Length: 326
Image (cartoon, rainbow, N blue to C red; front, side, top):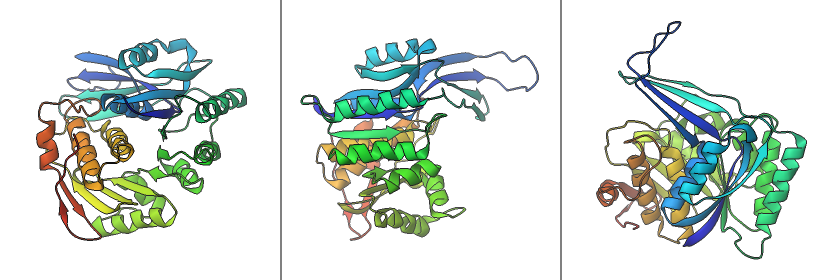
C-alpha cells in the first residue's frame, strides 16, 4: 500500500445525471436514463488515489438525512469514512444531458455548516495530523465551500496542515483560492479560467498563462498546476517548469478530469517520480477521464499508449522528456 492521504471534502454532492433526447423547459420531459452517484471534487480525488494504490481517509461534512449513497460508495472503494454528519441533506447536483451534446447543470448550495460542526472538523483534523500511527503523508482540500464556511476558515485548515509539517494540496477557486494561497498552500490547481480570475484578466493565452502561473510561484506556492483542457497542463514547481499536451481523445465528459489530474500528480510526487514521469501519468490519466463519465481509470486497456502519446517538455530548459510512470 502506498502513502496514506487525507482528503477533505467540505461540500460534497450527490450527482444526478439525466439523459434525455431534448430538454423542453416548461413541459413534462421523459428521461432515457438516470444515474445517482456520490461525487464532489474531494470524492473524485479519493477515487483516483485509491485506484493508484493509496490508503485514503475522506473527511468533511455529509448531511445525515441522505448519506447512504456515500456510505455505500466508501465501502466499495475501500475509503475510510471520517466524514462528520450534520443535520440536513447533502446537496444534489443535477446534470441534464441531451442527445445533441448540450448539458445543463443545476447545482445546489450545500448543507449549512454552523460553528459547532466546524469545531468538530478542526478536532478531527488535529487528531489525524497528530496520530502516532496512520498519519497521512499529504492532505488534499478540494471543492467549493458550503454555506457557513468562509474563505478564511479554509485558510485555517491549510495553516494547520502546514504547521503540522505536511503538504496541503488545494483545488478550489475564487476567494477560497486566494485564502489558500495566503495561508501557505503547498500546491494549487486552478484551471485556465480560474487562473485568469485570480490574475485579474478576462482570459489568458499561452504566454500569459505561463506568466500567471509564475506569479503563483512568486506567491510562495511550491507546486503551481494549471489545467487548460486540450491545451494541456502547466506545472511550475520545485522540479522546474513543465508543460504536457494530452493525446487527442473523443471527449464525452470533462467533469472528473481536473480531479484526476490533482490526484495523479500528487501520486507521482509522493512516489518520488521524476517530474516528467509524474506529469505524463497525470496528464494521460486526465485525458482518459474525459472519454467517459467519472474519473480516470489507470487500468484502462490503452493507458500505456495514452502515456506514450502524451507530450511532455521542460519549459525552462526546452528539452523533450520521455519517461513513463507505471
